[in-house]
Image (cartoon, rainbow over all chains, first blue to last red):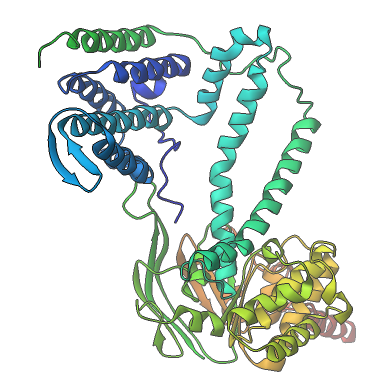
Length: 268
Length: 286
């Protein structure tokens, strides 16, 4: 039941996209997210589609994986779209159901919001699908470093993220194992009303929390016994170095952004 | 309650880039009252296989019959199957969750919908079988020793009164004394209740001592199957797949190679002792 979650999952590969400097990739993702909000016409999305298609094609990530990443947010997506359809004033009224009315303005906004969300999710999941958690947090640490002089604990934050990401699959595996063990004892996680189901989760959650705390303890001891001590100018095995391909990727992204901005002045 | 497994294949994450074949063409039968040992090293498919036997996993293809009922059928009542087939997972103490030992052991029987009196009877009975003092019933399962925790977890399965008992490495991570305790209890349970017992283990010694049938797994396939004598006479094959034979069998083989006439299928220390003593007496008499 947990195996279908692809958000935050890394698909190993050796494409140019995979090899990009994580700092550049994070920055590019931010630029892309901001650019999405600049789009004010449907034609503007053509550039975003082209850009994402380019990344997917180069990175060779199976398209089914990206679609799967959308599945868990479908509820949010539907909610956003329907709220926008029914509660946006403006434009001509097409249909009235009691106090709710569907207007052309509402439809337009709903379409834009929906597309925006989809592109946001695809864009960010492309980042996590092509970047290993370790290099991702490495990148975040580097980006945050300038702020450490104003008290942002960059290294600690990055370490916490690394550890959290590292343990997601472990905990999922553990949860599945415990579920199976309890099912072997006749536990039922699938039927009954909400109260019964919530109660049914106790035999899963108690052991899961206990094992999470145990793992945290063990990890802390293992780290301390190897003399780990926060961010005191630690050197690293893999130094991040920007390469020509990183600048090329940044340039392509900026060109797309300029096209999107230019698109705002189009008439269709 | 015989078990019949026919041409079972199982693929993890089918249809994704991570697809891996975990079981390949598994076929075997287990008759009533048998004590079966399954050996194989990590990743050989042992755990995957036993999870098929109570319907926790469904084979990608193939059939599994428990007492003639096809449990791969979609319409089968899995709760009923799990009542009959008790599966003790590896490190079962990690699934304890209740406030008291009593409540934890009662979890299974309660799920079966039994009445309070019956549950109470079964819980105390199960505690007796695994050798846990009844005074511990009101303690928290988190404040007792590791070996006791494991026995309580096993009692939790026994209280469901299964007809088939499957244990996945029940001695992993225990000290020698704890190991002996658990193994002897398992043997006792098997002898007393005559249920089919399936013991999954890394240890040749454990398996050689108790099982009357051994299944050797390697890379998702059954490599060897038969009585301990049949299986352990294939020492070279076992070593090739990284398993080896019990130490005592290995010693007997060495002695044979040095010209001492000991049968090569010696399985227990007692047997070996007898042969060696007989040999020593024989040479003295000459």
